[in-house]
Image (cartoon, rainbow, N blue to C red; front, side, top):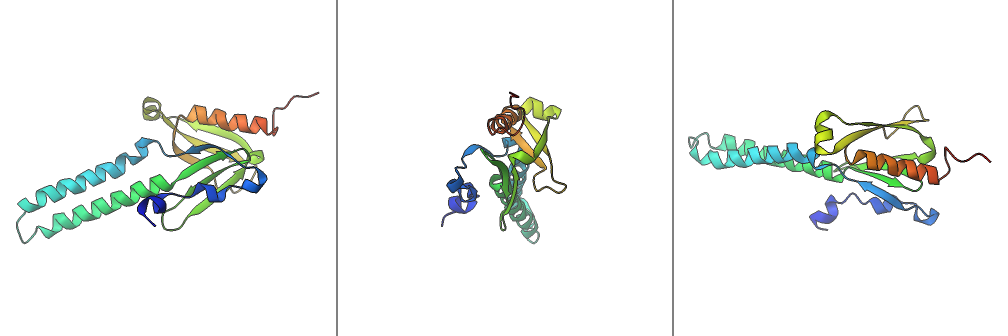
Length: 172
């Protein structure tokens, strides 16, 4: 079992294939979510570069901080990579977690409203955040952050809901 298979959240095992469930869209985080891990890793590498110039009896300190920064950056990047939001023809769900995995599901029929928030930097860089309102009091899916092309993804969800005949159908 290599790193690539361990880093994959395994979306396919959560599908109801016998019921005809298919993926409409699998949303990974926008690249902006990886800026912090990259900056931490670069700070760690910079500390490793300057550690040979530290006094010999203190050289262990920047090296220790550097390894901690690089390890933390790796953890953050893996956490962001394994966080997936999936739109299917039956529901939306989110799978996330590194050592333990969480699955939150919402049937399309429970989605009452989707708010798309796009802060200024999100508008400039092409990402936004989803906020779901559902018919349930407690919900496992509420905020989905760093969604690339949020308006297109919102339309995809609305199309799936419409095709499923859950709202806005024609009155005969």
